[in-house]
Length: 131
Image (cartoon, rainbow, N blue to C red; front, side, top):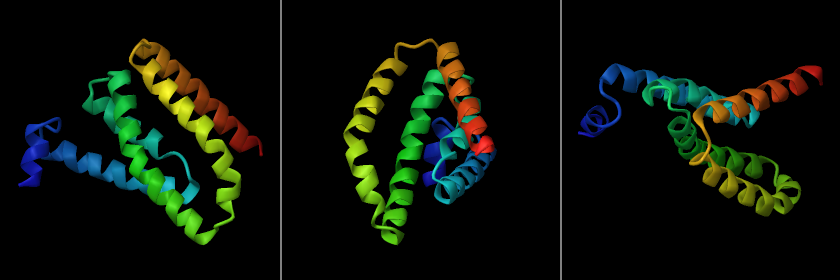
């Protein structure tokens, strides 16, 4: 049974799996609604799962957000095909930055990762409120 795989793996109990599923549903909803934020929501539960190991939590959040982002992007493009003309030229630089960030994640101290995340989140929130 699928639940046994998760319960015997990283999810030690069904309650944590259920709570994680609720967080994942909300993260997907937020990601689809505003195009961002799903990873932030997932970090809340992933920090609990990985016992506050920032490196592991951020790596896992990348894996979780990929399918959310791909699906959201596909739906956005379906509704508004012109978006691709603005996004396409940015893809190579974004991919290079993502690869560099993933490589640095393994070398960075967890406190540094958390600090960078906090500063970027605060900056993004401040810009959004001031608009």
